[in-house]
Image (cartoon, rainbow, N blue to C red; front, side, top):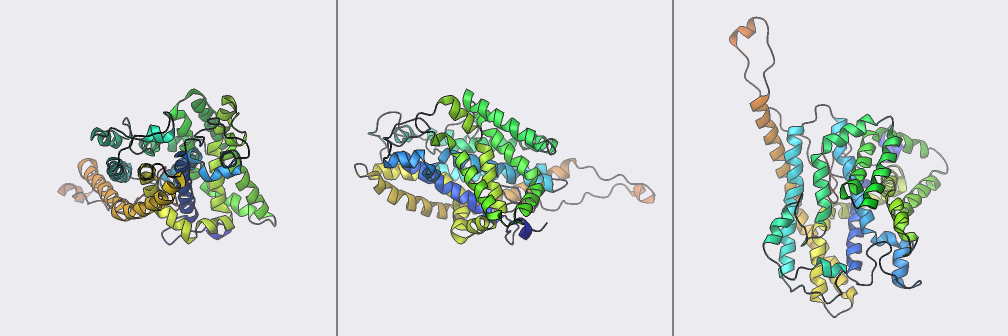
Length: 438
């Protein structure tokens, strides 16, 4: 089936452009989420805060308008996308180079993180961060009134450190751990290829246990697994999209899937501030499936695919990882810079400034990190081959002259990570990374 039949559009580099756009949209939602959290009265979690019914805060949190500020839910979309695009090259290409993968992937994550931490430190020290908001608010908890250089070291430690000076780093920890455990996810997804519904059901149960019991691993790893299942069954996804697109009511069907997935993603909020913990845990357990439904729509529904592939969303996708990494310290800086002013003043300055910094960060560091990561991966693969790969056994007269010298392996071509991977030539993205071709 062609990409045209399935409703998908690929770029000249083989990316699914609509997934680039979906990642960019998710990054913008996270920015809006943190912008609104600067308001002490904005509920940070389902059931937290109790705005009066009919007020602006109530409408923004407990109606479908919540989609514009659903930060936690947008991160789940990131995780599903990462599971899809990091797994895809492994299952689409025989002889995947694991020796190149690990140093390449670690550098692809750590170089932008290291740069973002330095940017965050610069904004933290630029103005005193002593919050006048009550203790426990997001702005108060995210401020750094007594900065020291140790904060930088702890933020660079994605596995066991503390990303206090750059709030979004909490999700990069799970991206790193997933990347290190990728073979496990790939084996599970392949093993459950025929029983994928059972695999998705298990992901829901594990997510519920994680949310209910406060386990980060169980709360977030199932989202990566759902993405891995999508990668393993991507051909079936395209076949399904092709079947739907042959019907006269295809747009109604896709619209129903998109609305249903969107509402399921924010379902805990739609029950209002009085939603109980058990109900919230049960509904949050369905978030990875809801995110998968949105990915399905981005791949299969032509009008949505066209919208997400348009220039504004493509731009958002290009800077999405950088924007995700740098926006919180900038927003907090603006909150203190305009202390005493209405919060929208800090937002009107902070959001454009964060986008501007993200553009520069993408050009200066993130784009170069792709090249450096590829080079390091190819170097590691070549060194390993030179040290451990035995020559092929020989027979006949040629064997009398001894083994032929080892040939230098070709440069690794697995490439960079990205949410739009479709060809199997590149690896792919993170919770918060830009989509590149597989």
